[in-house]
Image (cartoon, rainbow, N blue to C red; front, side, top):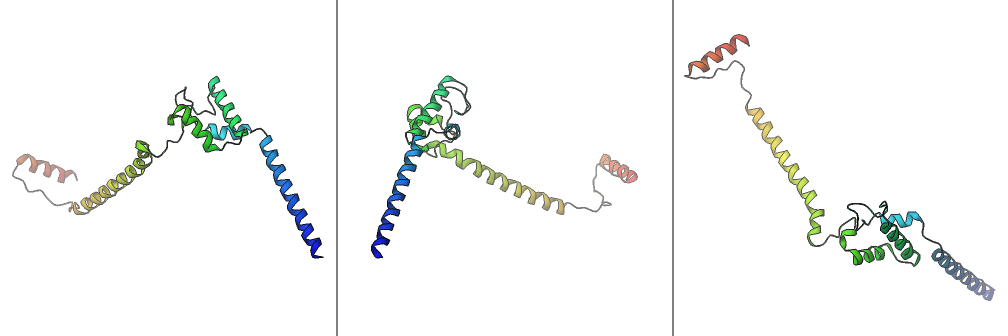
Length: 162
């Protein structure tokens, strides 16, 4: 009975191994879909055209680069390996998202810092305006004492109309 259990276990392991090998070979044998190619191509910019992602660029060069991506995917390259290949060939300017190194880290740091500074300035301004508005409430019938006859005449006129 024990021998049958071990034999069945060995057969099950062998069958699972064959299925895994067959599935891996079948996966490598299929050509990458356009969606898989474009998923990587949209993360790269055309080195020839200005500000145009590789997945929508109509030039012949970009069509060739998309085919290069397709070829690399069919050879089993990962997304990062393909992006590294294009950076090696054309420089970091082909990446849609610049690497966070050198001066590029400012792209990631400055917007949140600017937002926080702006929020602080607005907060302080609102507090100052509220305090000024609360302290500036003066009785409407209060008069301004002045020796200037024109100011007195203006105040009298305003009292008559108001």
